[in-house]
Image 1 (cartoon, rainbow, N blue to C red):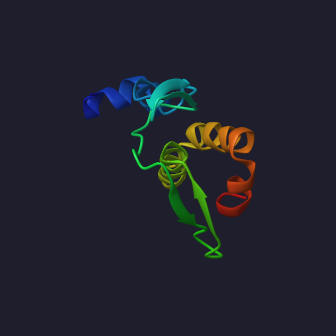
Image 2 (tube, rainbow, N blue to C red):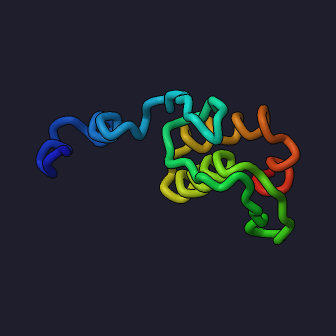
Length: 107
């Protein structure tokens, strides 16, 4: 953790980089119900085989595996905190692996 006085000397960019705010997310592999899944970044993974998620604006619903729902929730949280590198990595991942669900909940 960086002490408050360190911000004045290093500048906000250097302090944030130390907290991974400006570093490109690294893909990770997780085991999920007997298969290996490539995730766009490190996040907690839901164990449920299928989760239904509704579009936050239209209410339209779609189903996806628990690990995809984990990525979705991370995207929404990252968006709220301005971590757009994580948002972009997650959106690109969704477009590649879950295009139909992407069109319902993220487009």
